[in-house]
Length: 475
Image (cartoon, rainbow, N blue to C red; front, side, top):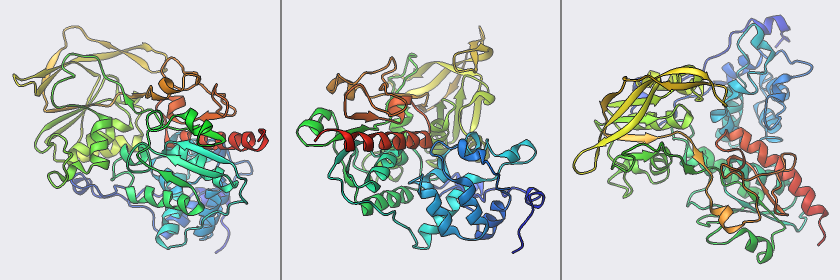
């Protein structure tokens, strides 16, 4: 194939993602995005003009060689492309699905000045799927054993990324997970239709093949403490990547009514406990069939919860958000998908009370209309209540998705680790080391709720510092 000029490359239109029909997908848990064909991937990759100084990589939290992998996709070398990605990213099939590329690498693409950016995320997903589906998964080589042992607390994206780097450097790595299934937020928080669980399992199996040991049903701070890992179990360092799994509530009357859930509980029951298959499984959620479901919040978790409720048979599924759609932190794609599937958006609306019946079951919500005032600390305009605008809407299920805090267990059992005002662990941003020697942390437990790729970036930063620490500390 003749080499295209930069001008010819820029004349190629960006390929949209192939998707399930909205009417069909709103009734099933199959993946919404169906992926590129090989022909689409090659043509999309040809849109990349191969900048001498690729700004896209600077927008990537784990610094993938985007220019290099896309060049190989354009040449049809899909296996070579995914090998380049895996130098910096252990979970390409996951990141290609859930990372907000539009705010990171794609936002930095030079084509955005006149055209749509190269679909970097879709291409990452394509080559990772190609490798897996063709049985060509390449397992990175590991160096000779150093004899050093590292404990990783939490099997979410930060922990998995950290484990991937450390095992390749020859350390013995053990990951401790509190739940019965590995993957952290990747399995309990993200629905099947956005991230199939089998993909997460296969990525974790790759780490197992490399030599990472995983132990489930281990609650650090209860089953065993960080001090015991270091002093009694003989680990040379510990990485804490437990996420931010403590849900926030709104503090309004009626939150204790039957039928009021947090998004954490709702999604965990659906994802891990197969509640959508009740009565075949004995951990049901309140039946959503023919019910009115309201989800409070405007982030990706809120979109996940409301779209899940539709698939469980909700008659009406509402997003209730106190700001305008412009201020919503959810990905544009997630909002688009929710609208296509029939989710109703009640924006500039804030709940003030949940109303129950005589048996304490939720039956309605009282809301007040809002208007936007001056920007607050987040940079978004602050919502201000409009006096006298209260109204009542009948609902059967309420799901609160306004964010999460940090579980206090680490602080309670390891008081030497310095904690910030919001309960997050304070670290040196250059090394991710905590105030306790030999203990490092990263991901949502440090930043608060953020993205998968930012957590992975923190895991890699910590892995490098841990490697230097264990290789230089006295025996």
